[in-house]
Image 1 (cartoon, rainbow, N blue to C red):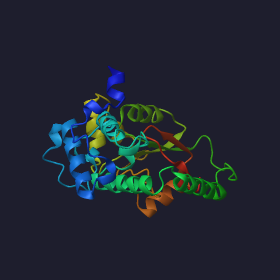
Image 2: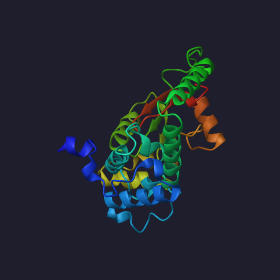
Image 3: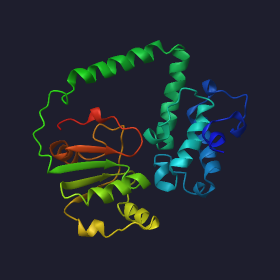
Length: 248
């Protein structure tokens, strides 16, 4: 059952099989994504007109994301597992898919793409401050950032961190605009929500998580605060590139 769900097959595609990604336009990509998203979750049919909004904000979840990625994999075999998380709006997905199409057409063997990736990470390594930075923060005064704080694993981690007296503060980083969302999801899992009130000075909710943004979706003041204070990162969301965070 899991193999059938996780591995994409062409029989799941409900589109014109003669159509290839090379001859798609921005509009046809957009229509295709709307079609697939509403087929995966029909409840989104009336909420998908705003293509700039994250599909996670209107009801998509991690299982839906796997299904969508599998659908796209049929046309783009090299599409990464975390594609839907890093490009969570239809507009963002369309832009990235058109870019991938152009790369395939202009660079079928991916030589240019490989060279750009090498240059990108070589440049980051040359500027990396982590290996040369001394650990000046006290082990008994931990400040922790948890990604995916509203997920099943993330919420369990937060509950346990707040029981640890050596943890001074916990930053909860999660997707979406509504800060009440995380509390509602704790309630649905029958987890205690009083922690958000009893530990008001120790827990900070940071919404609008964007792991592909250099500031993680936060304003510059919040980002600088994270750089100054963090001693630990617990990554329980999808893949995160911690090299974009400087200063700790």
